[in-house]
Figure 1 (cartoon, helix red, strand yellow):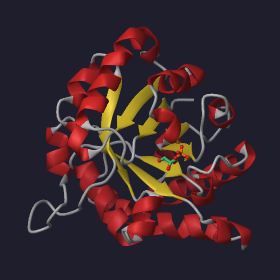
Figure 2 (cartoon, protein in one colour):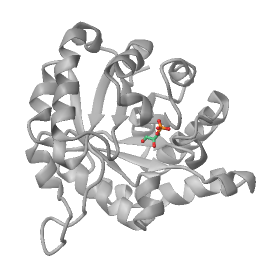
Figure 3 (cartoon, rainbow, N blue to C red):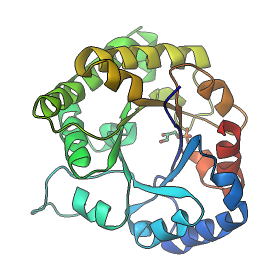
Length: 259
Ligand code: G3H
């Protein structure tokens, strides 16, 4: 396949600046293991740890990303962070619409869609998160929910494309909410089925090329000992990892398993 694998750590609200620096420093020893040409290794750090971290991670072949972003260019949005601010700090990626943002900070599908366009405009790679809750899964609504969450994003991207403004890669993360931080990961086959649906939705709205190029990653209780079962699936191109990305040894092991 033409798609490069992505191993993306999401640190969530963990690690002070000092702890983040120590993590990057410890990675130096694993430098060679982190540079396989088949994998992009990425850390999405808290805002407060971003400054200076990109340079340090670059030395060990790891990319830097953020976990959230506001869609406005600038303005009276107390506490928010813009695309330009993230770009300024060397962020190449930004996670958008993580289920924790949707659930606890009321982020709508529409806001996520706007942010996706803004991130692309700023030449950052958006990682758009989708996924069903436990009750939605039990009601057999997984495909409906994922299609709805992606619907507006793809519509807006289609408009961008029509304007000739859609260049640059994007990533879609399928994270079933019940699998996040629970130790209950989705079966690889179930994740593959949703990834197939996602790829077909992208192909249907943005065309064959976009469908082939979009990277789809799985998230939800991914560990070094199960990551391979996901990335072996034909439509799964990597993983978004919370808990297991916090320790150096397991982050390196995750990358090694995929390389
Ligand atoms: O963004 C990462 C996901 O929410 C997964 O978290 O690996 O701790 O289950 P987890």
